[in-house]
Amino acid sequence: MAQKPSIPKGTRDFSPAEMVRRNYIFDTIKDVFRLYGFQPIETPAMENLSTLMGKYGEEGDKLLFKILNSGDFVSKVSDDVYNEKDSVKLTSQISEKGLRYDLTVPFARFVVQHQNEITFPFKRYQIQPVWRADRPQKGRYREFYQCDVDVIGSTSLLNEAELIQIIDKVFKRLKIETIVKINNRKILAGIAETIGEKERITDITVAIDKLEKIGLEKVNEELSAKGVSDEAIQKLQPILDLEGDTASKLGQLEEIISTSGVGVQGIEEMKTLFSYLEKMNLATNFELDLTLARGLNYYTGAIIEVKAKDVEMGSICGGGRYDDLTGIFGLKDVSGVGVSFGAERIYDVLTQLDLFPPESTETTKVLFVNFGEKEEAYCLPMLSKLRASGINAEIYPDSAKMKKQMNYANKKDIPFVVLAGESEMAAQKFTLKNMESGEQTLVTSEDLIKILS
RNA sequence: GUGGAUGUAGUUCAGUUGGUUAGAACGCUGGAUUGUGGUUCCAGAGGUCGCCGGUUCAAAUCCGGUCUUCCACCCCA
Image 1 (cartoon, rainbow, N blue to C red):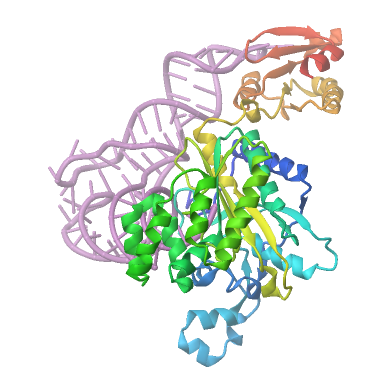
Image 2: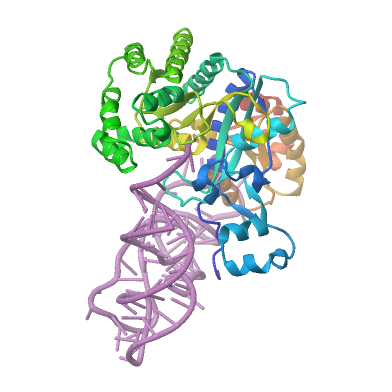
């Protein structure tokens, strides 16, 4: 072999065994989405760069994969831009398309573009790959799938509650025990306002988000480094120390941030949401987590994050409400809320906990051994009958040595093999071999269908 | 984007202070066994030692660069 072929950094091939498992996850998620009245859409892998740029912050723009214009794009670049060697300026002249970075922004574009054909509230799901030019790491790839569900055009908190029901049902079906953490951006805004650092809400939430990971001391250090006043940090401490159940936390918090209009509104929203959830009889645990911030800055209301119990892993699902996502595309006052399931991480959790159903590796149920032309002709009608009965069946395409054909069945974990040679043909029967026990029986075509059904 | 580790057969890995023809296990192919696999035995194929350059009589081994994969940070699913 000369030079081995390879694939780009951070991308992966999926083997048949992996695909069976991935499809198990996608199918489970899709089934639940449909159960709650969500409908699928797809959008192109590439979007106009103008749709994508500026939606994910400065960092996000850098992580966008850009697509080179077709044709002789260099000749169209003006001389001064070319000589300046400024990547940003040059990019805008040689690239006008990019690969999608997430599914939410393309969805917002979709809603605005098709607003007259859509009936609101619009409940859609979308399962497609997204691309980020990030440096790959454990559980982080440059190409990965997102499974988004959003409902847009309704401000009711029932939508939030229903999304949490969906989360509950998906993970119940996948047999993953989870804990759902819930917070509200308005509460975070209220906290920032109360401690007198309204403008620094992003820095404050990002720092608070790390509380569990790096500890209180480091969080305070980081806040200080970001320019938050010592006085404000002092005022923040009692909030970070809040203890007790959700109701008592909300009660205490209500008093602390009572002077903040949006803060109080956030508390009210949480109270309503939790009262819904308590009536829904969920299997998963759910709790208010004031340290939950989530990076994306378009969230304006509830924020949701799901963690798997018993596994050290980042969140496997997350989302929230965004009041004005379509505004940037010219459609005002359309509120949406959605969550995204991280398929790759769910895959890792299922692998670690050994929760994939065992039969999912079984694809073919029966293999017909090929003895030659006459035998082939004898087997083909039977093969069709089995397939017509919904039994996964195949015939070995060449009349190769027995050993080779049996080995093929073995490697593919095919549980049954049919042997039909001269004596079977004479008797108008088939020899069915159980590959696990080695047991062989001579059966009629009717019996064959019955046994394999 | 910053810092650290890594790269030898299809796979997982050995390879001495630089020294003839770079090894093992598993896997693969063939045979023992022309209609019976998973076990066993025998034989065989398979490597520009990630790539480029440098030091040296001599480089898988030392040096520089580059790429890959992995880990941490930033950020995120």
